[in-house]
Length: 175
Image 1 (cartoon, rainbow, N blue to C red):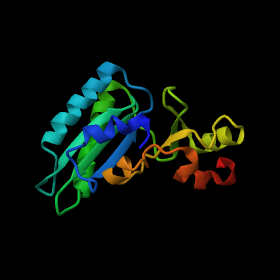
Image 2 (tube, rainbow, N blue to C red):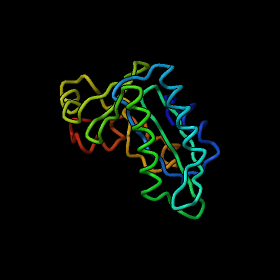
Image 3 (cartoon, rainbow, N blue to C red):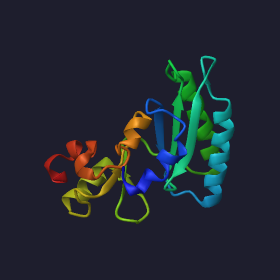
Image 4 (cartoon, rainbow, N blue to C red):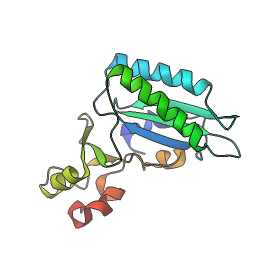
């Protein structure tokens, strides 16, 4: 796993198994430290009573790199249903509304060059940046659709561009 997240996600979610579902929400701007504290406090309250069809969800959540709200949840012998997912989304949207930030859509992309802050663009803009040479095949990108904690731990949350699904989207331009 890359250095960018290895000390964050893997450590924070160490009590959850690889099969735990993961949801990644990218904020539309960097959160301040005090905003991240509010989000983390709200997540902690929510996760303490998170349920899906009456079954307790063992969950964890945190802010990663000041831009990603990451939630992981597991029900031994079961799966988190739509109502459990909806409850987490409602909670996050309420907190975001109170703090004045939003979340990007699945049509947006996030990347990071070296130790610079995470930047976000539309997929069309990403394609343009790659074709102009502003982003290379070694640029670190973030996959909001990573489905489970095992894949996060394997590095699929933050691969380099050439090893990501973005490379398929961008075609030969990403090589």
